Image (cartoon, one colour):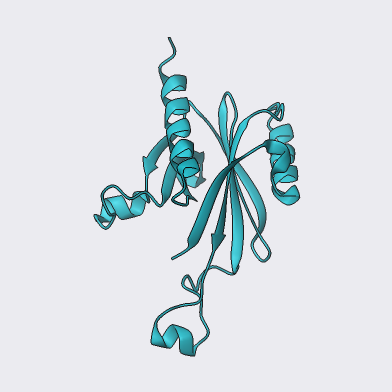
Length: 168
């Protein structure tokens, strides 16, 4: 549904709203962000709908998304994975999960369960392990573009989780 582009970024180059939200979130959890953590940012555009009724009603491809565009960022801390999203209407929020508690699935976890994902195509990653209600683990979908930086992001997250769970 989205047009996405992903690039590697420095922590200091993240959009100010996201950078400040990451800093606040880290401080509340006593995580030290040195500024040299590996970061990726995905810019997502929600294009106009292409179907007849979507055009007639002036809807977007994802009519449930309140924003025409938004940014998502991922920060790979030595002990945690931090993700955040910022959009004009949705606001800005950040979540974190310890690498020891996290797991990642290429593509959408829901699409994989429903058997609707396309083999060899990863539109992002589903990150599981976030605290949720009633003792269940929450999942966050981090959308990615098709650039080499997107594959590098996926590989880095998978490697960090694997290394945290299997120390030498």
